Length: 137
Image 1 (cartoon, helix red, strand yellow):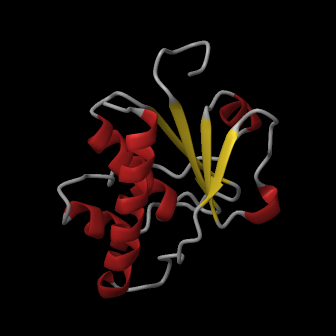
Image 2 (spheres, rainbow, N blue to C red):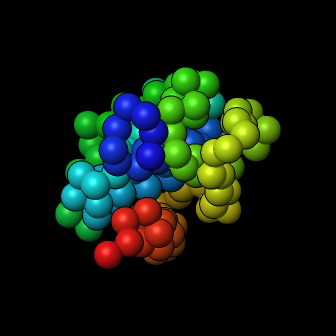
């Protein structure tokens, strides 16, 4: 837990912050019920959320349509307990003492809903496992 909050802080990072990281953030916000502070960012933020990612999450009852791609900052990484990267390679800053995971996920950019659903479902499984570790019952 960071000093500023009694909740664990998780940062999801992908290149454009328009698909994978937004879906993961949407799931963690929804599934944690506020028990986890959720942030997301990108190394080269896109200009909008991937509409197919929005559609895929809407099928799960999660609305990410109002999310806006954000630039990931060094301060966000420093203030997070867990940093999950999704294909941003060497552009994600690393700080000693942080928990890092790299989730090898297909980029949903340019894909149709049939191809995005399995990516969404993979993200959901990973988020559920992460949540189980962060908030043991």
